[in-house]
Every structure is written in structure tokens, then in C-alpha cells.
Length: 247
View 1: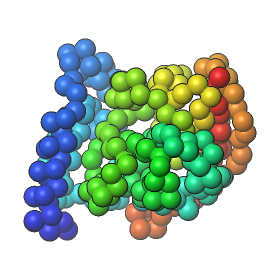
View 2: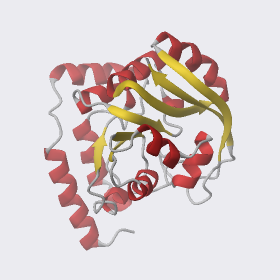
View 3: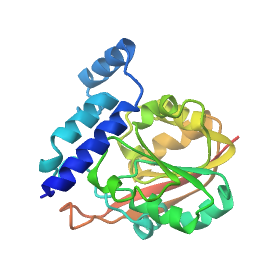
View 4: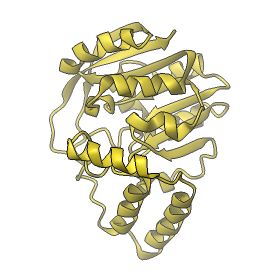
């Protein structure tokens, strides 16, 4: 249970954050309504404001086992294993003194650890809702936290681009790979690198789409995502990790 004082503080910070987000226009609402009616997204992914309002209202009842993937609390070591690569090495090589983005950051443990190891890199992280754990990382001034879904990420960053992007298990939930990778391409610099993973069966779908969208596949490798017994009674799953460069 969240202490009353902490809950109040988080609600206040959440409202302040909410006020800084773009206003959702009528077209966005219509598109979101249509998408939800086709069950493309979880009902939680409605609009920036409704997501945040829902999380703020339910903060005291927040249940870590409900609605989140086993990777939600993944730290750097777990993310490295899931992607089959050292993210710290990749950040140093691809984004030294530049910008890096984590898509689907969960509790923010991985990006917080990477920022400590790479203070000269400007990090951004996205999730589908503000969660209590983000508040614990507010001392990391070099991390920008954003509420975004992979399929509207370019709109959120409004022209900003990154040298390096990584994501763990987020693309597994994508219903429209072409749209997701198009959005990814818009926020990745030319020559920039992205590393992400998908389930083995989805790898066959993503491989041709990556090539079609103008990415050069550097490598792909089998990996395993370990279930976190603290939050899910789920067995480990087999994945395929991709590294690709924007031409």
C-alpha cells in the first residue's frame, strides 16, 4: 500500500506532468475510438490524459501484477539478457554525447542505470502511463519521461531524433508492424541504431518489414526473457532480438 503522504505527492506531480502534455484533438479521439473498437490496443491506451487520470485515480490500488508484462521491473542485467547484447556498450558506441531512447521503459530501472553509467548522454523513456516508480528516478535530470504508445511516438517527440533506441518486449504487442516501424524511423537519426526483440514466431513478420521500411539488419539472435516471480507466474519465453540501422 502507498503511504497517504507519498500518494498525495505523487498525485500532485502527476497532475503537473499532465498539464504539460499535448491536448488531444477531435481527430485523435475519433482514431483512438476506432482503434479500441477494433481491439488494436489495450483499453488502457486511450489518450494521454485519460491514461494519466486513470492511473492517478487508481494509484492507491495499483497492483503490479495487473496489466503489465514480466519485463516491467527489468533492470539493466535483465534487459541485456533479453536483447542479447550489452546496452551500456551500445550506448557508448552509438550515442556518446548524443541522445538515446527507451521505448516501453516499465518501472524505469534500465534507463536509470544506463544514465548513471553514461552521464553525457541525454536519455528519454516512454511508457503507456505514469507509474509510481518513475517518481523515484526524478533525481536523474538527464532523463525525460514521456507517456506514449509506439504507434504515436513521433507525434510525442515532435521532430526530435535519437542516435540509439532500444526496447525490450514492447514490439511483441504491436498489431501493425509497419506503422510502428515507420514511427520508429521518424524518431531515429539517419545512421542511428535500434535494438529490440519480438517473440520467435513474430520474427518472421518483422524481418521483411524492417527491410521494407529502409532498415539495414545488422544481426538477429535468439534470446530468452526470464519471468519475474515477483510480478508474474509465467515461464520464460523465447524471443528473437534484432539490431538494425536506419539507412
